[in-house]
Amino acid sequence: MKKTTNAILVVLWTIFCAVQSGSAADLRYEYHLLATNKTSTMEKELGESASHGYRFKAVMGGETSFGGSEVVVIMERDSSNLEPGRYQYRLLATNKTSTMQKELQAAADEGYHYCGQTVFKTTFGGQEVVIILERDRNDKDQLSWEYLLLGTNKTSTMQKELMEAAEEGYEVTGLTVGSTTFGGNELVTILQRKKASQ
Image (cartoon, rainbow, N blue to C red; front, side):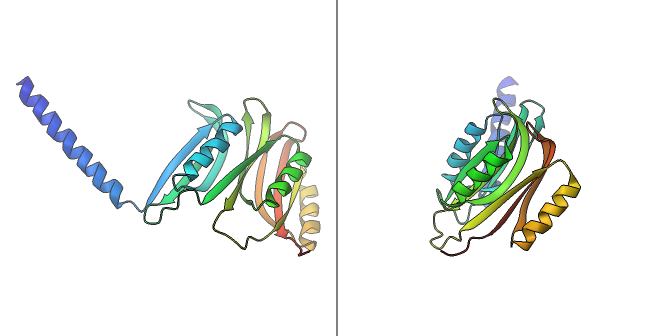
């Protein structure tokens, strides 16, 4: 009886594996979820995932059941058109908006573009704004962008600053609301415009 039961279990497991293998082969899109409470670790994981053909899709920071305060990223790849290593990623994290502005522009000057942002409490940096940037190795005619970061704890102030930025040709690319070390509960908006040709 025990041998029969074991044989049935083996058969069922074989069928399950075959079905799983078949369904995975039929999937056009595959996903890879990254989660960590260290921003330095996340940048490495982004690079490793990209080396296997994945591309950034979404980011969110917050409390998870088992990891505590984490930044969570979803990566996606098209199984019908894998391009390992095409995309490169840089992660910026700081609790000072003035520092982020400089780092964001420096990365943009190297060909990186804004992908997404979030706010979460990191292991060593405390409450930080985290921005993920992407560079496409295949894009030979990359547009140069200028970035502007606005941070305030007053919505009325943000409204005024957004309108002033719009008059200078900037458009909004991202927004987070969260507690930062220096700004308290702060609205952080990132804007971009095409860089004027020299």
